[in-house]
Image 1 (cartoon, rainbow, N blue to C red):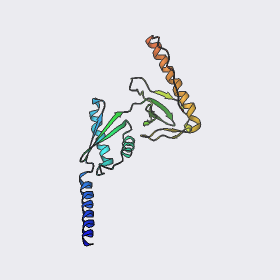
Image 2: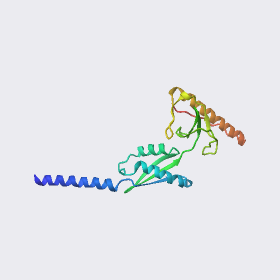
Image 3: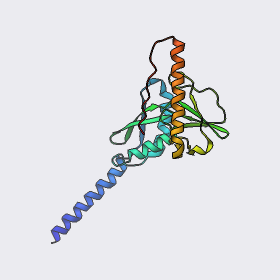
Length: 199
């Protein structure tokens, strides 16, 4: 009987020792951010500090990647976290890509700049020219003030249910006009593309 108690007690001590050592050794102490473009070295350094502040000291084994992604993208609205790699014992490599402004919405006394997935990248008091990744000016989308439910920087914009169809039609019509304008400008015989919406 005493031997059984000693064996169980010994096993518990070993388990506790593993947990304690693991919680000290296998905690996040450094982050490296890698962008697809090598031109973003400075941006990567800034992102590393911000992301490290979110996950420093957390267990590298069981930390929540989704939580890291959400917090990082909310703090750094111009990045999209593609994946996270664990490098034992204590390093994370975050693979990211840059988000680009695609749409601008006049909202009260300010302007909302969104990427192509409707994530709010920034708010501004000025509608100064903003350009997409392709070098074209952002598409301005007309939206009534009451159509928007929430528009927090770093999060996806949300619209009232009744206004979504109207807003999508506005975006599609603007995009088709831009494409037609570019086709005429280039004097090309390319057909206007068809847009498919899956709602």
